[in-house]
Each structure stands twice: as C-alpha cells, then as structure tokens.
Image: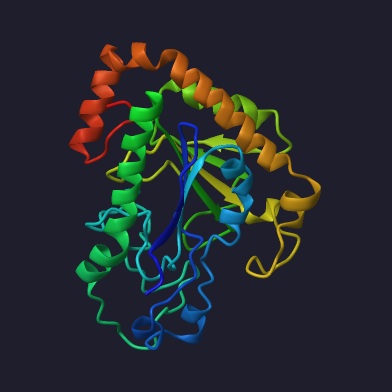
Length: 284
C-alpha cells in the first residue's frame, strides 16, 4: 500500500501540515465511488508544491497521500462537528462540497478501520514531530496549510478573503503570534481575515495557525486540478513571501515570549480550555 503520508524532517521549529492535497484512493473504495467522487474535486490541489519553499528553508513538512474522501485528516476522529450550527462535511464524507454523491450507492463505511489505517498514523506522526521539535529547539510551531475555492454556497455565503487565518478564536496561539502573522498579511496584495469562516481545527495536536488560501490567488485556470499555480509559483510569488515572512515573525515572537507565556496565568487558562476540548497548545 502507498504510504499514508510523506514526511520531511527540517532543521527549524516549524512543521507544515498539508492534510488535503492527497489524491490516492484505495482500490476497494474507488470501485464504489461515483464518477464525480473519483474526480476528488474538493482536493487542495498543489498546496504541497506551493509550500516547497518553506521546506527548502528548513521547515519540516508532512503531506497526506490519500484523498480527504477516504478520511478527512482535518476532522476529529469521533466526527464531532467543527463549527456548531454549520453544515458538517464529515470525517468520511459521502457528498462533495457541492452536494454531489461521492459514492454510487449508499456506502457501508468502516469508519473505525479508516481512522486506524489513515487518520491515526498521520496525527501520531505530527505529535511525535512536534515533540521532537520542542526537544530540539525548545519550541514547536505548526502551520496547517489548506486551499479552497472562493465560493462554496453549500458551506458558506458570499466570497472568502484570499488569506483566511485561524487561531481557534485565539486559543491555539498567543495573541502576539496572531498579530505578527496578520501584520504581514495586511502588507500583502491580498485581503486577509483572522478567525473568520475558518478558525483552525480542534484536533488533538497543537495547531498554532491554520492558513486557508483561496484558489483564485494561485490559479489562472477554472480547473484547480490542472492549473500550474502560475501566479504563485512562477510569476508573483507574493503569497509565498507572505507565508515565509509571517512564519519568520511568528517564530521570533513565540521564541522571545515563549517562556513567559508558558508560566503566565493566561497560558494556564488556555491549556485548561484546550485540554477540556481534547486539544493541546504548543509549549503545554
């Protein structure tokens, strides 16, 4: 079987996770899928390629190899809804973002088996990597990398900003970290929002910043699958500069203030809140 993920061990405190760029489909699953489902239209196409610059600059990187239709690595293993009151796409989705059937017939999904085979190894590797980074550098930073089309009427109204940054409402990182990242975002050529539609996943690993980037900024084609990311990867590179500069600001801010935050009353409160929800905070 194809490895569940690929992993690159870097030499900085930063780990970039790309959970939705995978396109592999196990044979026993693909034979039950509809034509639309086999096209895996909700893939975060080319995100791993986009973030190669971060890997080249020392970041560790983990990239899922299997499609989010097999199991969504950005959902809790118990399939708890991420955003209360909003349509949930599910741990093992049966419909696309557009509402089309992923399977030809009503599927019989062994969720437990998929979690054990695909979900758990991915998150265990993230947890191990962050632990190793904390031992090596005294701090670990996780950047959760995504991409999405600007308009998905079934999931949200209107059009998204190009840069959608999430900190779980301020609970997954210190305000100084979020402020540093947003400061860089506001200097870019792209509109940005913090903790808007996407607030970061409440998973059992520490998510510092989730970056959901709209495909309209990195594609000059209506087909995200076949586009070459020309605007980002060859001509403009400004979104890459944004991510690099924001990571740099946030790393320096966190390292400078990390020890004080670790012992602060607010940090203890955040750790208690996150642990009660099954999530840990970097440094906790």
